Image (cartoon, rainbow, N blue to C red):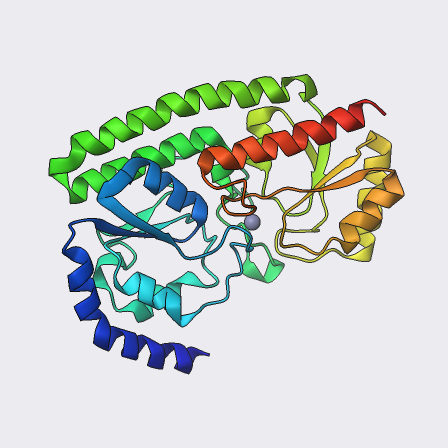
Length: 312
Ligand SMILES: [Zn+2]
């Protein structure tokens, strides 16, 4: 795989200098993001002064993305690479960036933006965590974009970075950031009002994707289908989870679209509860087409499920 990538990288590299020159001619900054969430935020701020492409699709597990030669092509022509950071992409991104041979987007270069700077990170480990323990969240929870207020912080970082590249367009980016913030404030108020009747509801999720979301909207996550982030369910953990859910009368299990539903469904059956497939990213379903669409969709799903559970 590595060799194939390297050969492809070389071939792309050979012809791409021509392509990048042509693309740069329209003056738009070429932004590549690792996820569709970051792409959505970059579009909000960058408007028609940028082209934005995401690498991973919103329906994929962002921890485990299969590397493809086409990703190197995207990185080769990027002016700016925006990553989630906190080691979310550590399993697949570093070799791609390296093989792109694009000096602009190497770690620490001007065109490399780690979006986790300035956001609120939860679950930062206090003890010593090693990869041998199978933890894919060694630097705190990397699913932080699921708090819309963190989305606001990410958009600000993107605005600063774009303005650094194009000082002459700062007013344009800041105006777009302002419009985004206004719209977000109204939307957060709406989502919070929709979720308010269910404040304190206890739920279970498959992976630790939703702590920021739960914290923002008042849900209480009491357990996970995975024994540890990145480690598949085990029979003993599943039994413990069922007991705990019964003890606390928990009925709802949120599952990201890329996990097997077998274990969550057996847990739901055992506790007389329900599995709800909830996309954690823009592009996870077609309704979640942008940052606002993601929360509109997830809040709607949850409210419908919680309404039904409350009636039982
Ligand atoms: Zn994770």
